[in-house]
Image 1 (cartoon, rainbow, N blue to C red):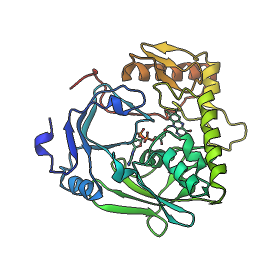
Image 2 (image 1 turned 30 degrees about the vertical axis):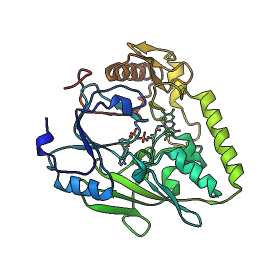
Image 3 (image 1 turned 135 degrees about the vertical axis):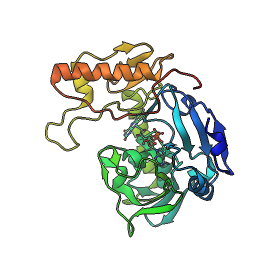
Image 4 (image 1 turned 45 degrees about the vertical axis):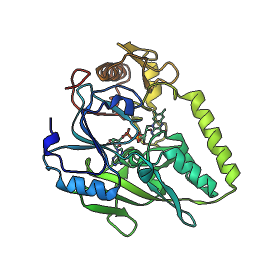
Length: 313
Ligand SMILES: Cc1cc2nc3c(=O)[nH]c(=O)nc-3n(C[C@H](O)[C@H](O)[C@H](O)COP(=O)(O)OP(=O)(O)OC[C@H]3O[C@@H](n4cnc5c(N)ncnc54)[C@H](O)[C@@H]3O)c2cc1C
């Protein structure tokens, strides 16, 4: 129980907060403390005064996460509410958005302003903060391609700016080298041109309809479980799902976890899965793919927290 040593804050501090409801998989144990800061000043003040020995973890909307059954030690920070989700047009081809904004909301805001180039974000069911950390992407574009600048608060409570005119951020495939406990708070994004708003909106709808046909988006899932073994653009690129299919893993089950029969690079919680079931299934898939193809798949879904029993610790 770490609460007694926590600094004051205006936002909510919730001890032993269940995290499963905040993740797409709906599994995992509680946070020692969940902090929902009101705004950047609140977040910076809290982090600056927080004992440096207490670990800090950011949580977006949990669409790329397995929170382990023993929960997350220290303070989990979630940017919830209107202050964190604002999206504004701040230039001819420029949007400024809070890191709590959903990627879809950003794509739709760009469409409303007739700004093209951000449509791909509608395919990613996360927040901008999560998209930054994971350099999320689809349809040949990644967050890095549209980023002008990002702002955030480091573990010491200091405001930092990266990007144009500031220190560079290094992005690679589904990865950035920002420190793990750096909290992204705001992004400035660029569109690539202007186009009829209705046309862009129709394209977003079409992309979403295509996703619903090919991915189990109504299940408790977390997107691609494993990274494709070859970087995008590699001639003859091998895809993780084909290797998993060839290894006979489509529909494979461990406890309440299953390899999606619809898209076999997705794991799903069929109802009663634990985080341990999902991880064990993922490891079984990795072992079978290694055996059949010699490829060692790399987890793309982030697994965080303590291994342990479901329930309060
Ligand atoms: C059906 C489905 C389809 C998907 N399709 C795609 C796809 O096409 N392309 C793709 O790239 N991904 C895809 N994903 C995965 C996921 O949506 C993305 O990785 C997304 O960017 C994660 O955002 P999130 O807010 O859910 O982050 P979370 O899952 O909550 O967290 C992911 C990581 O980001 C960190 N993080 C979250 N917020 C912040 C912040 N404010 N500051 C610093 N770090 C933060 C967390 O600590 C964690 O390490 C899909 C997922 C699902 C469920």
